Amino acid sequence: MAKYERQLRGNFDTLLNHLHQEITRGSISASYEDGSDFAMGPTRIAVRVYERYSWFGGNRVSLNLTVMGEGNLLYVSAIASGGSQAIFFKINTFGEEAFLDKCIGSVERYIKQAGSY
Image (cartoon, rainbow, N blue to C red):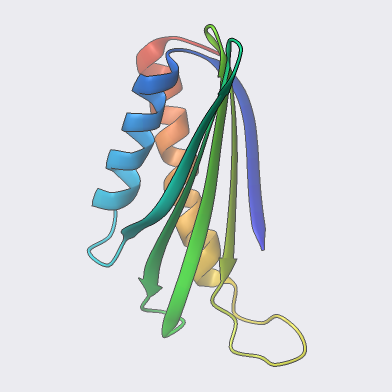
């Protein structure tokens, strides 16, 4: 399992749309599986699950993306999993790491475009 977390500033909807577009367009096999949106007062949370085929590993990997925001303060948590073919321990995590790297690159591009930290 590979994980990335980041605090930043920006627009919740713009960031969520940006990440969705880049993740689904980043691989021909990437797909949006399901999601959930929730608001509690001014705090918003969106959870998205994506999946793609890992050519290198010959299996499917998933990416769970959570975006939380209150005003222009945002938090992103992305966790990639799957891809291992072993039964008792994890080997061959290249696919999940590559999927997570796509998400990290997308967040970093958003930060540069938005001029946030």
